[in-house]
Length: 310
Image 1 (cartoon, rainbow, N blue to C red):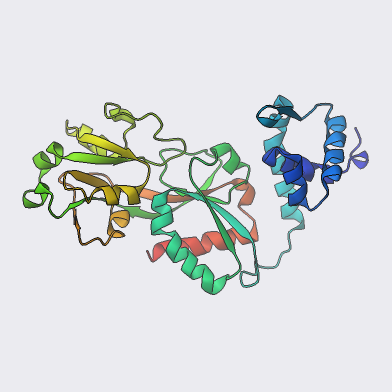
Image 2: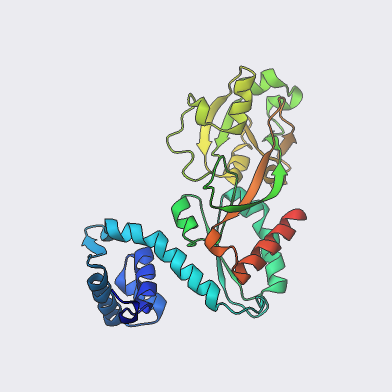
């Protein structure tokens, strides 16, 4: 097969089709008509000798060949973009670029308000699209479909670039009329009822039970080291929900200090845990495909600067 006989624009079509899995939506994103996109898909099928996308009851599903092509396709297109990308710096003031950032509600609550305030001054037309950890997989991040992942991680693909934004400790939130307020020590902590919050890593937290101590995370891991367990009666995936639940006088929420400090609720008391919990790191990670992108370098620098002041 000679390259001069291939329309390389079809690779762009295929990239969008594999991401959207919908001809109409893909055509709209590329600014072409649906018949033109359908014709492009027909030509792609002829080029690769494979149907690539098959219509099922669940919509269009990529074939095994297409799934293997997708990461290679992203690398090729990212390399082309890097070659033709202007050498001038990113013009934040006039850009209307959409940055897709995947983060937990912890990162969203503690970092994004400050980031948005900074962007309003320096890049008033830039748009943020905030995704949750359950929205996409590490593979899709690696393919450059998401600009940044901001979260706490036990592990991540070695190919990712990463930067630590800050370290945070843990604090306990409970109602001022909670009996704990009179004598807050390890014994009373263990006798209390607790709100558990997911570690919020990629795919973490599914099917958790109070007896599943190995998957419960930092707080329960620290208790396990001293031979103790707490009474978990509520499981949630949101730190702000945990803070609200802590208003009930029989519940305790042990959450990151920066998240706890946001509550500023006069009905709540914030205390240091009566046992040692190791601090954790909030990290920013991104695909190697985006490492040299000028706009991406700019947003990474801004986020780093905002985090350093938080």
